[in-house]
Amino acid sequence: MGLAHEELQSDYVENTTKTVPPFGLKDKFGYLFGDLGNDFFFILVSSYLMVYYTDILHISAAMVGVLFMIARIWDAFADMLWGRFIDARKNTTHGKFTPWIFRMSFPLVISGILMFVKIPGMTDGFYVAWAFVMYLLWGTLYSTVNIPYGSMASVISGDPIERTALSTWRTMGGSMAALIINVGGPLILFQNNVASPNRFFLAAIIFGVLSLACYMACVKLTTERIVEPEKVSQKGDFKRTVKGLAKNKALIWLLVISLIFLGTMLMVGSVNVYLFKNYFGNTAALSIVGFIQTATVFLGMPLIAPLVGRFGKKEVGSAGMLIAALAYLSLYMLPDVSVTLFIILTAVGMFGMNLFNLIIWAFVTDVTDYHEFITGMREDGTVYSLYSFGRKLGQALAGGLAGFAIAAVGYDATKPAQSQEVLDGIYSLATLVPGLLYLLGFLVLVFLYPLNKKRTNQLAVDLGENREAKK
Image (cartoon, rainbow, N blue to C red; front, side):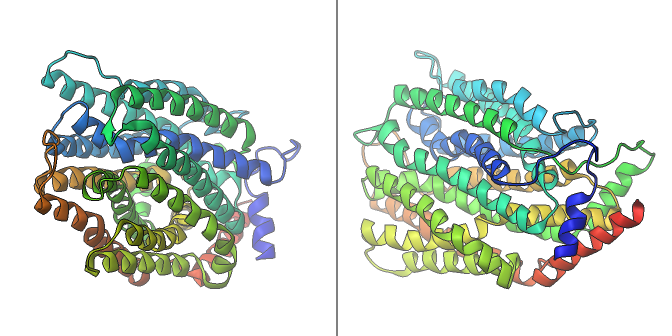
């Protein structure tokens, strides 16, 4: 790995006479701040926007499901278009990706705050239209920031171990946002177990300001080191890209796994609000769940490097998926589960989930390298945007299924209390469904994803040799 490390670190440096600071703690903190900024709003939206729409704007859960599916499918295509756009841009003195994070973060935050504005006295039709317009706008602008941010990981460092560190620090940033929102959110957003429109708007302003500050820190602290030489676009390049993507089995199966994983994780987040609000009658307990979710991330962080170093990313990630599946299936099968037991077993499931989540972005850099190995072209933005396409489909699946499922079990926000049949249905959505989906993700990762530890290490060596041969 020593030779591969030296080769990868020296490839495609923009100017050998220019002093480029070595990869270090500054980059890690910068990348952490990027996802901290992303997730201040992303987690707020994914966890609480549905209940804002159903309980405050009084939009039906089924209609919210339709909105979420349409928006996320549109966002998936927006990701692809923006990724191609970014790859077509020239490098600047400030890098290829960071300038776009700086430019687009301001309109993104403004649109996020406007999503939680309720204009009093309007018709139901107006509220539905407002929800569609603002949610679609926010999702589109999110792509313009998230695509360059995610693509940066491949150019901050070329070393597989350093990229794994970036993935871990990125997940830590998202987990810090989750800690703040999931612990503080229920205490801020709800008043006596009832969603408050003024409190939702105040939370949007607070998290919007924090999000913008984090984006600025990301731009300031990160350094793009790997720069592909300028080349003249040739006829057939796009066709070559598409063929390469179709041949990239690692990317294809990672897309499937991510769709399952993210869809499940987000669906659980949405359903849990209804579970604790209605089934357990204790929204304050959501704060404990939010704290535990972040705690399991920090518990897993020191284990990731030695586990990946010994067993490999695929092997560690699949073990985490299996742990999560067994925990949620146990919750479904056990009788008369108390809120305390539910939280304990959920903690086990979250620990397993986060073993995979801590390294998910390192998987992305691996499949980006594999694309270069297949095609000979470095297309970080395109590959990342395609991966983000799959994640957005997972979000569409999560939002749509959560909305449709909540409606299907008979939830009615206008009723003061839900029937036992509805409550049991909500409990099944929070336990059985994620258990089966995590089990499916485990099987796909084990039997279909091709980049195990040995192949990933060899890929780094092969790329170094290929790049050296081009000099």
